[in-house]
Amino acid sequence: MNKQKDLIWLVIIILVIGAAAWLVANPSFPIQRGLDLQGGLQVLLEADVPADQTIPQEQMDTARQIVSQRVNALGVTEPLVQVEGDRRILVELPGVNNPDQAISLIQETALLEFIDTGAQSLPVGTCVRTSLNNGPSRCELPTGAPLDTPIENPAPSFETVMTGAELRQAQSERSQTNQYYVSFSLKPEETEFFADYTRKNQGRFLTIVLDKQVISSPRISAVISSGSGTITGNFTLEEAQKLALQLRFGSLPIPLRIESTRLVGATLGEQSVKSSVEAGIAGVIMVLLFMIGYYRLPGVLAAIALLIYALLNFAVFEALPVTLTLPAITGFLLSLGMAVDANVLVFERMKEELARGRNVHEAVHAGFQRAWTSIRDSNIATMVICTILFTFGRSFGASAVQGFAITLAIGVAISMFTAVLITRTLVNLVIGGSSDWMGSHRWLLGA
Image (cartoon, rainbow, N blue to C red; front, side):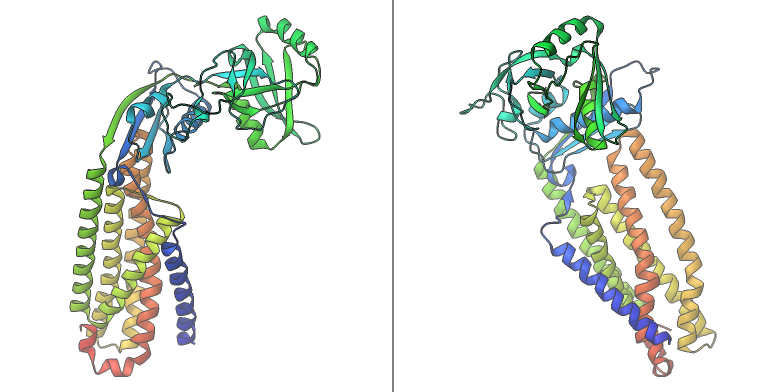
């Protein structure tokens, strides 16, 4: 019965290995490299407000979204923009070769405009020019190109009716028929002007643009004389919330200043990759040789399990994905050591049981049973430390600490799977399945 159970687990393990190998080999899931491995720019932004002023989380999230939209215009692959603590935003731009342009783009003030497009409804994302600023817009240019790049086919120009400065409030709401919409209100001094405009332009489109790019193109269906109106359009909840945020905070909701910048050269990144790979390979080979030399046959099985462990780690790194940095690689190598430690605990318990005179089958069973408590407790303690490190890194903008904590936590979780399940299944099938023969060849067990 136990052998049949082990065979079932073996089939499951083979399927998991196959899926992991496919994921690692699939070019659609590349390993993401951080700044220290491929070079780039790191910018830490901080809210430029008094230290005793509380900043609503909603404003920080909105600022992050706006900064993220801006850096996407640079064409950077997998940029990182995240809120750190309660008043900082971390921006990492791998592969950026024009840091001045990137910093300028992050800091610039966005402009929200309402333009008259007449009978024309413009799709979301359309590039336009406006009467308020008829110069070229970034969305007209090739990704990452400077603003002075010649434009062969300029975007169409439209009359600006008003800007986001005239709005007092905007929020997403849900109607009695469960349709999401955005309600807005104007500042009192703009009410009369807007009432007159909507009276003269019923049936025409009042298109909303942010940084000269269309975000919505609603039709004026009625006169808005009270200064309050609604924007409908078969929105989902997320779409309505996003539009409301853009209307409220077309520009950054809070002033941001650059706390620090760090530019990492590509040459340093290449050397870091080379050194890390060489150190990792050398360390793994030494560990495998030690395991095989000291524990012999169990060491061979543990070496197989460790290779599977490494494969599963890289598969998870690609699937999530995890951005690999030098600290992240360090976390992975440390977790590899903990995976080895789990096997050492098991094999030492097995040797103790054999020394007490138990047969091989009993020693294998007791070895895993006795080692499990120690493996579990040490891994739980490590997971707690990883949680503390991740929280610390997130609070203080230390992305290197976060990367270390993430890869270490992933490695510890996978090591429990490989040490307890994979190694145990292999040992049961190879050693426990031939306990009589192993009993007369105990030297193969390192005993």
